[in-house]
Image (cartoon, rainbow, N blue to C red):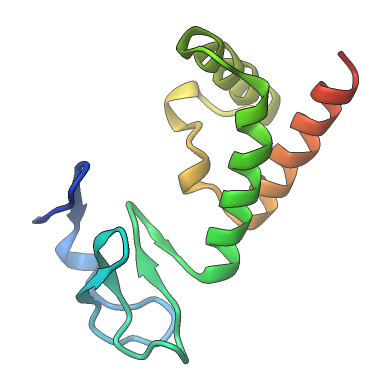
Amino acid sequence: MKIMRESKKMKTMPENQLTCPACDSIMKLKQGAFGEFWGCPNFPECDMIWDDGFSNKPTRDARKKAHSVFDKLWKTKEERTLVYKWLSEKLGIPIKDCHIKQFDIKTCNKVIELCLNRWFNK
């Protein structure tokens, strides 16, 4: 396993996933505004990156939107834990797997729907 250091945390890039799943190019370590990341060398034609899993721009945008809605449901760390527990139950997944950063677009849209329903039905 290759280890990459980022300013805030360590990230891993499994050796068997060094190939871009969209275009079969070898992923390259790049420098971005927020630190290093693994990106497809064919950018902008291919916008796939590795960020604890492969994602393209539409997926990353969906995750940002889901997080922005979800984060309005909690104010303290304790509330955050409870809201993640609620979300994992609603999605039918174990809480250990309930990470918006790893969700696909469909699941992100479900998160938004669930959060808005919770927000407006209080």
